[in-house]
Amino acid sequence: MSFSPEWLALREPADHAARSAHLLSQVATRFGDRDAISVVDLGCGAGSNLRGTFAALPDRQTWRLVDYDPRLLAAARERLAAWADTATSDGDRLVIGKGGKAITVAFHQADLNRDLAEAIPPDAGLVTAAALFDLVSPAWIEGFVSVLQARRLPLYTVLTYDGTERWDPPHASDAAMLAAFHAHQGTDKGFGPAAGPRATDLMAAAFAGSGYGVQRAPSPWRLGADFAVLSRDLVTGFAAAVRETGRVPAAEIDAWLAARLAGVACEVGHEDLFAVPR
Image 1 (cartoon, rainbow, N blue to C red):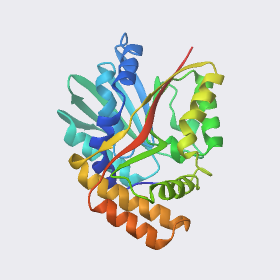
Image 2: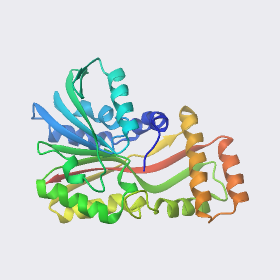
Image 3: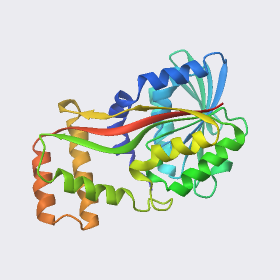
Image 4: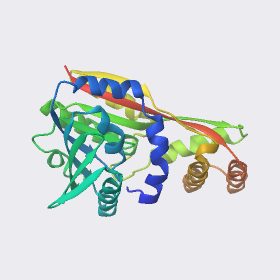
């Protein structure tokens, strides 16, 4: 499953505002005594997770951005170059300076169903991801944790959907719409039947059972008038997903969507997780 560069650009400010500052500070503390670090970002999209994480990491960073969609890898290169204080190409890599950090970025196309272990190079010191694990299956999560455990690699992941949504004002169809959306969340997104809102619980249990210390923290989107365009796209996509399930009558979906497009504030729950081998 892939997302458009436009959608990822629209959600990036909300993502960065939502991520847990406390958990990010724990990441900074963990790696604070290092001069350099090598990071692998899985399902990198347009590079938002690098932009949200780099300031907490050592001054010299090497990132490998991994995605299946070449359009997103191209968008990541373009947006990182525009965001950086300085940017030059070194072959296929991008060398950027930002906020006093020296960052070398490699872009790697891979199918994480088939090539997960190969996507993580031998020199990796940290694996990251954003808004990924609710899309993959419980079996994939088990295999992923096994790959990291075998190499004693830490994971820092943000913005995994936790299944909670609160709308203001409430609507009589909220509960039915949410139940249908969760049914859609559990469908196959390319990795087998998706874990959906269970993903963080499954990861936390798997890492703890593999001898890791696990920290979790909420990272909810809080969308009001300042995120009006994102809110409109969110409810439109939400309604389209519900419609695909056939679980809610079309007229009820239409009424709910019309009410939400007239103006809405909402909180969409996510969780961040930092798992470190003991």
